[in-house]
Length: 588
Image (cartoon, rainbow, N blue to C red; front, side):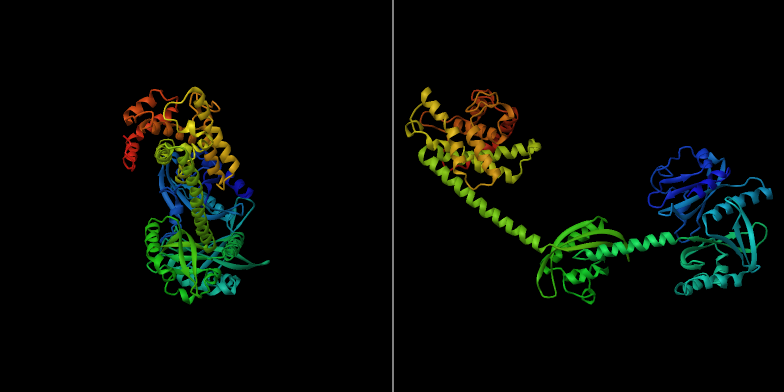
């Protein structure tokens, strides 16, 4: 690349810059470009937008006309400029375009014209393997050679047909017929009547063997007479071809290593298969012919309509997809399949996708088994909780319905918190586990004397101190039993049984925790426990209304609570009232 830089910086009148082919970012620009276009920066887009602008000659390279040239008026260049583009491999590895910017000539001075033409030709010579032109009117072929780093001289002029035949003999035998068809003398002569170029890539022989070249034929206008001329530009693209071959080998090896295979699929009504790896067919024990009718008919009938609907909606937007469905193999066995697709182009008006398919049957079976095990485990856990809860109910005449209501109210309040305070990450599964654990908040009452537990009146100070022990007793019972809960469920049970009488200001018991030292699930059961106690009748008191209960809690008459929980409680009052209305027992 040093040769290109030296050449570019030695030219005072032409602008030269190189851009990446994929994102049009600048890889190089010469001194002239920096003077005329001071906003240019290496690593930035050549036009500042990341897209090709209207003046870019790259737009004309691969269209129907393939003019390879644009002309536009540019104030910075003080007139019209001609821009030409050519493909280039920067530093032998990066696909790029090299753009030459030539100011248009204002004076008809012949020497000035020759000087500009010479500089343009020099750029082509430095960047090409060979440069020549054919005069189809006179039947001559003229080659150009380089003299030193940055100048050219006219070489030998010979017979056009003979030169064409000699060049043809240097083309690889396997490529020769194609070259002869595309670049025949007759077609080249016809091409001089148009403004479009012809391009091809072939293997050409030199003293070291065959290497890949690009061959470009560009019609030009003769400024002195009406001769029909074509410029022939030959470039060595062997390194680029080697990279393409290596990439193709690596891609093929990658595709073949995917057990479920890779397939190129047109997303029409049949999901037609355009190409697929062998592993794609092997996975289901089928052949290429089996898929002649398309892929859709191989999807299990029960899943077919759903898959077709999803893919039609997603591929219609050109978006990638990831779907799971069932497919039947050649032995009529059903497999769960995951297919991931990315759009690569269009074919016959339909999007074409590269699809990677994998057999996920074992994973789906494992998921189903896990779901079933979780269901059985939950039933077992709920059975243990109900047994302990019933034991408390048997000991404490007031606890039976209270336990059921505590579960329901806890669930309602947790759902409100999940919406209002998403940072707590209260999922449906977590909420259900906490609600189940709430049923054991008073399990420690099993260890409290019946005399105190069922006393028909208010407790004395000593009796109340004994009653307060049910928090620690419950914690110790659950910890000693080491019930077969999962660790998360077990922790909820332990925390709720011990801390459901703690208060936000540290005035609760048994450990006098304050603020968020108290686990949030224990805080929720604490406020629910108080609320239900207020609105429920006891042998020593009448039930308060929901309005009165809420007022007492908000005024701090029942202890201090988390302000966020108080807000959630206020917003949930209607739901709480509706829940009490469902209770079989008359509460008020």
